[in-house]
Amino acid sequence: MSAGDRAIWVACHDCDLLHRLGEIPLGAEARCRRCGATLRKRHPRSIERTLALILGAAVLFVVANSFPFLSFDMKGQETQTTLVTGVHDLWTQGKPELAGLVLLTIFLAPLVQISILLYVLFPLHRGRVPWNVEGAFRLLRRVEPWSMMEVFMIGILVAIVKLLGMAKIVPGLSLWAFVLLFLLITGAVASLDPHAVWERVEERR
Ligand SMILES: [Zn+2]
Image (cartoon, rainbow, N blue to C red; front, top):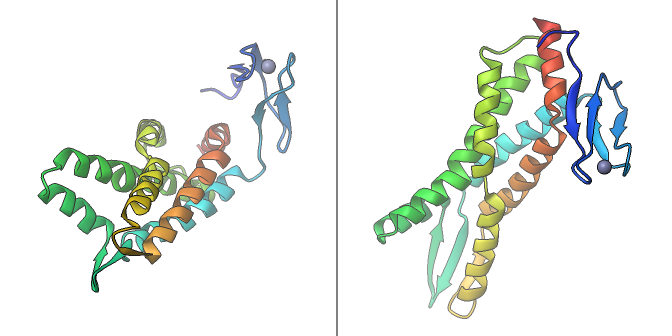
C-alpha cells in the first residue's frame, strides 16, 4: 500500500453500484451517487473511540467470566452456575460438541477479538506500529464470525423461560456483564474504521 494509491473500489451495499473512492476528509462521508446510501464515513478519532469501547469490553469480559451466571433455587436447594462450570457440565453430561461450541463462541472468539483489537489499537494510539499488524487484522476477520454472543443470549432466554416453572432463577452479575459486553463489542466493531488503522500505520512507518 503506497501513499499515492489510496483510491479503492467500493460497491454500494444498498444498490451495488461501484464507486472509486479517493481520500475522504476527516468527519466527512462518501454517499452513493445513485441511492444516497453511505459508502464510507470517516469518523474522527475512530481508533481512540474503538480503543475505549474495547477496554470497557475487556473489563466486562473478566467480570462475565468470574461471577455466577445464573442461580437456580430448586426446592430450597440453590445451585449456581458460572460459564466455566456450565461448559464443564455440558462436557460431563456427554455433550462435548456443545461444550466446545459454547467455549468457542462465547469465550475464545471474544477473547481473541478483544486481545487483537487491544494489540493493534493501543500501540497505534501511543504512536507505535505493532509487530505484524496485517496478520493480526487478518486473524481478527477470521475470528469475527465465531463471536456469537447474541445467539448465546437468545439460547439463555429460551432456557430461562423453559425452567421458570421448575425453579426460581436469579440472574447473576455475570449475565448482565455479558449483555453489556455484547453491546460494547458490537459498538467497537461498528466504530472501527480499518482505513483509519491503515492510515495511522502508514503515518507512523
Ligand atoms: Zn447505492
